[in-house]
Image (cartoon, rainbow over all chains, first blue to last red; front, side):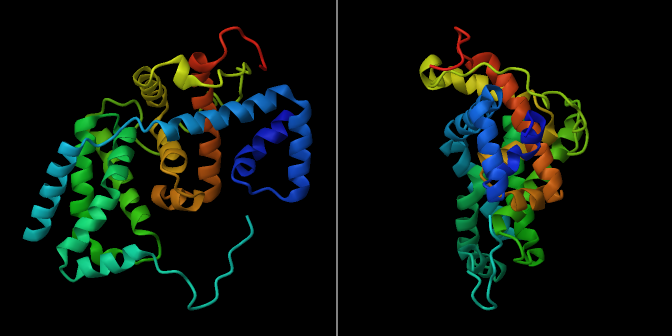
Length: 77
Length: 209
């Protein structure tokens, strides 16, 4: 398996959607290719850091105001 | 993942279905439950796409008002949250078009770019970015980095990786095929990784601890 082959399978690999035979090939490629191993590791970290730090949160005060407006419009509907 | 084979009559009914049904019959309390269940998610999606707080607040309001008016059109073939997300994505893209401050305003523009599709930075990252940067500083870095992606890429990353929709739900919310979502997701992840690497790579350049 080449690095390009791996890259084309990376999304399925992350989603656990590769057949066992291909998984074995991917695992042996990762065991011997530092670049792809780092790529996997840092891409996972990219996803994790965004999941762990929700950068846009709706403040409670704005939330209550928004919900009140929505519900007032629904009652009139 | 093996295909799920469902026996007729054994499909699990999502609890939202009963709330939607009650709301359709005029139960506004049931609708308020749905609003409170998904308002934060809709707000985050809208702000990630528009990159503007006021727009995201307006969109959140508009999405639920529109959804209420269109409850009869909700077929129940998809999750209610996916249906709402689809409305939110469309509203957000429309808002971007109106503002015209963004270079690209559709899901299709700019996705042909090869930028970041070929990984170039293979430095290992610091194991604990939360320690290297304070929480507020890291938050700023994350905002700035995702804002640099085109709307098509940041939307697919937001739905699939931040909001944890499945690939199929993401495809449905964006009106794209599953292969198109997978391809855009790969490029979105690679572009983000490449851009974040500038901040999170080990300063000593070492590969492994």
